[in-house]
Image 1 (tube, rainbow, N blue to C red):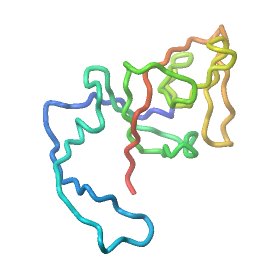
Image 2: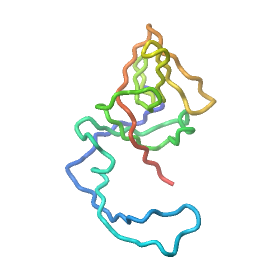
Image 3: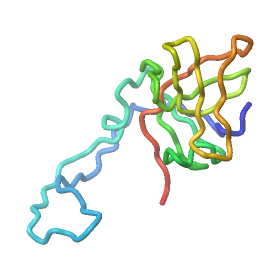
Image 4: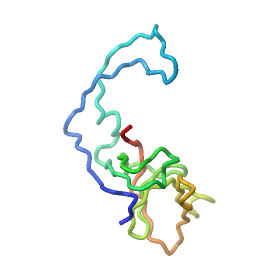
Length: 145
C-alpha cells in the first residue's frame, strides 16, 4: 500500500456534532467593530458529509499534495458518489497502491494524468498496462494548525 494514505475510516453519522456557529465571518485582516454577531448551530456531519453512505475518511501520509493545501497527517473526506472530473483531487488505486492526486483528463478521457502538487514529485500518466481505479473525490481537508 502507498505511503500517501495512512488510514481509512468510515464516518459515524449516527451522532450529531452540534456546535455554535457565529454567522458573522471572521476577517483575516482588520476586524470590523460594527459587525453584528449572531449565533446558530452547526452540525459538522451535515455540513461536511453530503452522502453518508458513500463517504469515507483517509489520513494522508507524505507531502506530494502540499501545494493543494493537503499535508501529512491531514484527514480527507472522500465521496465515492461524485464523478471524478478533470481538476478534482481524488483517491485512486494505481497498481494496488492508494494515492491522492489531482486528476486530469487530456483529449477527453483517453489520457488520464495524476498530478502531484509538489514539484518534487512528477505527474504520472496512467497507461493501459496499469491497474487503475478512482475510489472517490476529495470534498474536504481537515488539518490541525
